[in-house]
Amino acid sequence: MKKIVFLIASALFIAFGASATTVVSVQNSLAVERTNEMAEISLKELGLNPSSSFVILDNNGEEIPYQILKNGTLIFPVKEIAASSSLVFTVKEGTPSQVIANTFARFVPERKDDFAWENDRVAFRMYGPALKPEDPSNGVDFWLKRTEKLIIDQFYNDDLTHNKSYHIDHGEGLDCYKVAHTLGAGGVAPYVDSVLWVGGPYSRFEIKESGALRTEFTLYYDAFEIGFPKNAAENTKCVLPKTPFRTIKAALTISIDAGSQLNKATVVYEGDDVDGMPIAAGFYLHSFGNSNGKNLPCAEQKTLKMNNVIALAEDAISDADVASGRSYLGVIIPAETKIKEDNGLACAALSDKHLLAVSVYQESQPFVYYFGGGWSKWGFETDEDWFNYMKNKAETLQTPLKVSAF
Image (cartoon, rainbow, N blue to C red; front, top):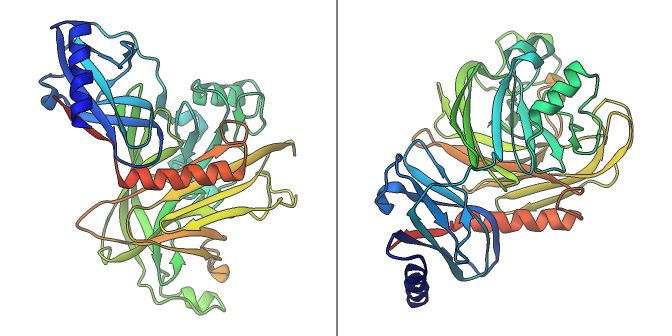
């Protein structure tokens, strides 16, 4: 393999001349084809600095986009790489073309402090302080898309100023997902005493990367309650868990790359007894297929449960009661995981039914997982297409692309 890469690199050097700065090899060691992944390599390894002016060319001599992260890492997209193979890219001096933005995130004060983000495949939002009187959760809302363009600003503007609801598909997508006080479409929460302690809205936010190929931000939860007050047992007929009542803090960092159906999420908890605390990521299992609360029966709901992967396929139904294909969700936890369905603690109204991937939080290191979704009208024609995507992603996340310069 190395000999082949060297020969290709030599040919590229001759073709592009001595001005070529360096050659980058991207290797896929898995026996599966990989698509729409991001290659990463430090500028230091390339002998470059953030102020350098350069272009990246593929093996056909065509320019590809890139982004330099604040930590000095260079990222660029690998659209497709065959099983057990490698690709060669050339980095050379030059002025790069303007890159079309394919990721985006922003605070949405005009819609009760939502925080929304998207890429060219999917869109999401989470709930902020202004919505607190309506008892929102720290769950994720998922917006279906069938366009590569960024639609968050358009959807909010159409809904708030033109009476054109984003809960109805007008040709580019819609929000038909119901979150309520649940984890929604991939949220995370403590799972202590077999109770899912769903939290409330975020307290504040910080955008850490804002680029064409990757956007990253952190949502801070300054008051995250676990357990019941001492007098709770007096006000209910239920036998409550013995979890001590306490308030902890959480910081959730989310990163989304162009071309991916999934977000990378990193959560850090602070407070008493968080080390060794059971933690769960997952999604709400709707009783009905629409988002407006009407009692419309949901068509067959399919789930995938394997190792550290859970996935869901269910009907997508607009607020106009119009069937809009199938909506897909998925969660991957690289750490050791137990999968279970949780019906919530009905007497305490803590949570509705969820499909969860349960693991253990270790205070010495952040907890990382992946979540996202898809749509039968945008790249996944069948439920099995989505489930296969999730299986493939679980495998590739365990073995990242190997990127090296020579």
